[in-house]
Image (cartoon, rainbow, N blue to C red; front, side, top):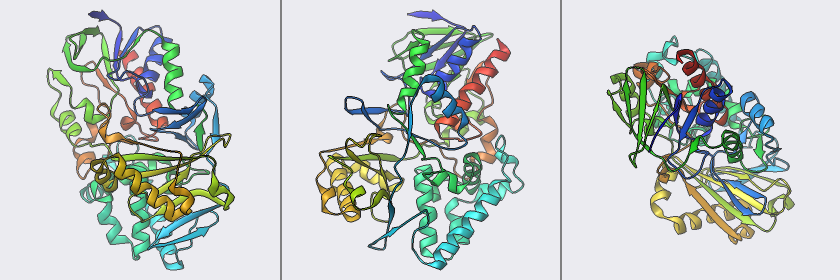
Length: 450
C-alpha cells in the first residue's frame, strides 16, 4: 500500500488528532498513522456497564486548562466535578487521621516546613522561562541537582520530606531522585504552581468526563473520518528534498510534504530516521523516560465511605497505594475507589502480577476505609509501563543535564519533521491541555512551510 497526503501524522493521541483537525480546517490533507487499534494514546476508557465509564488513563481537567475545556465544549463532551464532599484522610506512620479542607493534621512544624518549601518552589519556578527552561538565571546549578537533593537540603522535617516525595510521585509518576530540580521548577511553572498541580477542587484534578476522557479523542477522530488509519505502527521516516516518507511495520508507505511525530519522546527515539536525526535530538530522546504508574480500581455497590462522612481522598505512606480518590460515576450508581501505584511502587508491583496487586491494593483500602473495602464487586488495574505504545505515563521527565544540554532540540523541527505531544508543550506539559497546545503549534509550523 502506498498513499500520499499533504501531511502525515504519527500517533492518534490528542496531540495528533488536534494537529490533523487544525490542518484540515486550512484545507490541507492529513493522514494519521496509529500503531494501536484505537485512538486516544494515553487516554483510555473502560465500560463497567452501559453508560458507566472509568478512565484507565488520563482523566482530569482543572482551572487554567482553557484549551481542554474549549475542546470539550466544542465536541459536546460533558464534565462533572470530582467528588470532594466530606473529610479526607491522611495515613502516616501507621495512623489514619481525618481532616476537613486541604490541610491535614500532622503538626505545626511539619506544616510550616512544607508550606515554606512550596512557597520557595513556586517563587523559583517563576524564574524558569516556559519556552526555554535552559535560559533560567540559575539553570545550570538547578539542572545539575535532582529534586531529591533539593528536598534533603531544604526540608527540616520527616513529614515535610514525605509530602514532597508524594508530590513527586503524584505529579511526575517518578521518584524525586529521577529528575532535576530545573525540571521540577519548569513543571511547576507550566502547571501554575504546586497547589494547582496537587489540588482537586480548584486544581488539576477538579473535573471529570461523564463518558471518559478518551471520548475527546473518539469525537475528534469521528470528525476526521477516514484519514485515521489504525494498526499502522511506523518504523522508519525518510527525508528526501521536499518529501517525507513514513514506512510502517507492514511495509506500507505514506508520502507527504511534512510529517508530525506526535508520540512520547521515548517512542519517537525508537523510530529509524534516514538521514539520522541531529545528535542533540537523538541524545535528548535517549534521556527522557516516561513515569511509572498503575491505576487501580475497586468497584462497590455504592460509595459506602460517603456514609462515614468521607470524601474518599487519601494521602498515605503505606505501600503501595499512596493516593486514593473517589472515582464513582456522576450519578453515584456505584462506588469506585481509585488508587495510584506510582514511581518505585509501580515498578515493584508491575513485576508482582495482577493478583499480588489486587491483594496489596485492597489491604491498603481496608486500612483506610475499614473491612467493608475488602470485598469489591470488581477489581481492575492498568499498568501503563506495560503498554507497548506508551511505555509509561503520565509523561516524560528530564533527569539532570537534559534540559540545559539538549532541551533546545525538544520542539525544533528537523527538516520537514515536526514534533508534537504533551511533552513538547510549554503550559500544562504532561496533561491533556498540553497535548492540545502541542498539536496546534505543530500544525501552525507545518502550515508555514506548505
